Length: 507
Image (cartoon, rainbow, N blue to C red; front, side):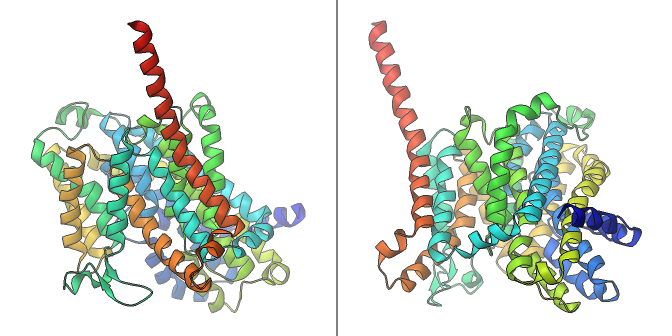
C-alpha cells in the first residue's frame, strides 16, 4: 500500500495534474467565499469542460473545488456574519463575535488551521479506512438516521447560552420552520396558509442569511452604534486584519476537541445525504457539551471555530468513501463527481478499488494536496474581504445588506427574499430578547432528517416503535443523546445544591 501511495503522489505532482489541483482549489475558494455562488453549481458547470481532460485530471480538479469551497465559506462568516456556504454556519457564531472584539486575525487563523487539519484527517480516513467505514455506512437505515438527528439535537443543551429553556424553544422553532411546505411522505401541503410561495418550504440559505446577516443589519440600524464593539469607525479602519496562525501553545489545549470533531466529521461525512453542515453542527455541539466553559460558546470562543471547521472539512473527503467503495454519492457535489466518473467511462463501486486502484490512490493524494494548496492561497484570498471590512460603518452595513440580498436571490426560489427579510427581523428580535440563534439552525438542518427518517423507519417496521428503537446503532445513539442532555441538567442541580449548602453554612 505504501508503495502505491508513493507512486500516486509522484503522479499527482506531475505538472498537468498539479495544475488541475491548483486551479480547482483557487476556484473552490472563489465560489465558496461568495454566498451568491455555490460550489456544487460551479462543479456542475465544470463537468462538461472536463471532457477534454484525462479522467485523473477531471476528478482531481472537481475534488479540489469541493475541499477548498468548504474551507472558504468561513471567510465572510467570520468577517461579516454571512456564511459563504452552508458548511460555515456554525463558524459564524464564534467567528464574528471574535471579529467584533478586534480578534478577526485570530479567528481566521484558527479557522484555516482547523480546516487544513480536518481535511488531512478526513483524507487519512479516506485513504486507510475506506473498506471498514463503507461497511458501517451500509448499516445505516432510516432508523439510524433518525437517531443521528436526535443525537445532533441533543447538543442544544450545550449551545443554549446558559438557558436550556430558551435553547429548546429556539430549537422547536427551527423544527417548526422545517415542516413548512410539501410533506415528502404524503404530498400534502403543511403550514403554507394557502400561499403557493411556501409550497417549496423554507429555503435554508435565505433563512440562514436572514438570521445572521439580516439580523446584524437590523441591529446596527436600530441601535445606530458602531458595528464593532471595540469602538467606532476609526478603530475599524485602523484594525490591521490578517490571518494569524495559532501557536502550538494555543493548539495543544484544543487537541481533544480537534480529534473528536475529526472523527465526528469523518463518520457523518461518509453517510449519504447527511453532509458537512450536519457534521459541523454535531461537532460544534459535542465541543460545547464537553467544554469546561460552555457558556463562552457563541460569544467568541476559538474552540467553537476549531470544532466546526475541523468537523466540516473532515466530512468533505469522507464523503468520497461511499462514492468510491459503494458507488453512492454522499453529498450533492459527490453526485456531480459521480457524473464526471461516468462521463469518462468509469463506475465507482465495490470493484473500483481493485480495478482502478491506481486512480483511487491518485485521488487520495490529490485530496491531500488540495488542502496544502488552499492553505497557501488563503492568505491572499482574504485580502479583498479584509479591505471591505475596513469600510466606514454606513458603507459596511450597505455592503453586508447587498451581499445578503445577492446571495439570497441567487440561492433561493420565489420565497427567498421574503424569507430573508422576515427571518432577519425575527433573528433581531430573538437576539434582543437574549435567545440564541444556533438552536434555530439546528432545527432547520436536523428537522427534515429526523422527521422523514422516523416515518420511513416506522413504515418499514409496520409502525412497531419497539422494532425501530431496538436496532443496536439506533439504541446507542438515542441513549447517548439522553446521556448528554442529562449531564448539564445534573450539573446545574448539583451547583444549585452546593450553592444552597454554602448559603446555609454562611448563615
